[in-house]
Amino acid sequence: LRFNSRRLVGELSIGDQQMVEIAKVLSFESRVIIMDEPTDALTDTETERLFSVVRELRDEGRGIVYISHRLREIFEICDDVTVLRDGRFIGERPVSELNEDGIIEMMVGRKLEEQYPRIPVKQGRISLALRGLCGDGIHDISFELKEGEILGISGLMGSRRSELMKMIYGALPHHAGTLSLYDKPIAPQSPAEGLQCGIAYISEDRKGDGLVLELSVRENMSLCALGEFIRGGKIDGKAERQAVGDYVRLFNIKTPSQDQLIKLLSGGNQQKVAIAKGLLTRPKVLILDEPTRGVDVGAKKEIYQLINQFKKEGMSIILVSSEMPEVLGMSDRIMVMHEGRISAEFNTRDANQEKLMAAAVGKQWQAEQEAAQ
Image (cartoon, rainbow, N blue to C red; front, top):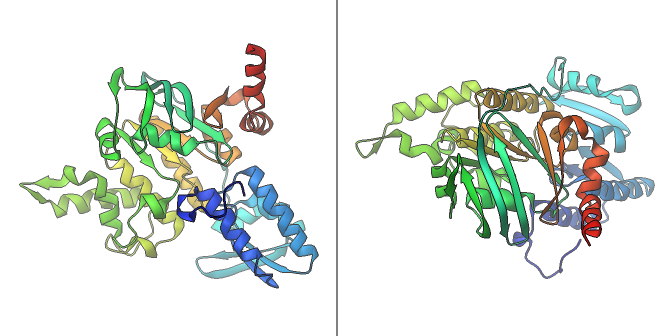
């Protein structure tokens, strides 16, 4: 852990909070340890650090129940796998007897033809443009985003990816550089102004930033777009329910009713509500920060298909993800960040995990700096 032990946990990033929680559990020296999505907010480097600890614990004779939606991790760290679906026991097998497709079929009850269904779309005008954007920990960021394009953002924990997205959205201030939307200068000073400009941000922390857990599905989904339903100074409940119902069907959200408390839904369905909440504002630019975190493979595929649908309709999308296969599989173009800077940019056809990781640890940026000197 790279921070002072006296620092408040609430001030840490989601990933650092996860590392503190893992360290706390390990300090109890338990004989059985249950890890529920322990790498949910961790990048590949932090995940490997955790795995080395898990292997040491296993060698000491501890029993570990490891719950994960990341199938690659199951094959890397586990000895046996148990699959549950809709609260029922489906099966248990040694990992050595299974492959990824077999586990997916057990999990969702059917075969998934392709995990990352990227589609080609003819790109339109430049929608969003950044020129020399600087802020707290962000240094000279410039890029353009087009209609019908998915721009992937990769990088390690601490690379300031989410901070950059929040600056674009207006949730964090910037002190230099410019933003423009369809050639019109913008400078959102708050999330409300970001939404008014036509930018929607779906947070990586859906429970902390994205949803109000004590409100219903309907109230959460319509929260940012209530202005659309005001008639004569009152909320038109019928119009609101109609719009929410359309998205519940479109997103295949599993909920007994629109009035169900959001906290009672599964993580995957909560995430779909969070995305729908942003879309109800009819944004020109959609920023998805870890959109499939803590989501099972079936719900992931549904989210990917929805992303492709928005892409076909000409929406500009920024996809921030710690999962390199996801970035490589869904993006048209990929930018890698390191310590608040863009360290590399790739066309998807030229990128692979090795190149992304090299850029994520700063090798390419450092080489360019040395060459410039």
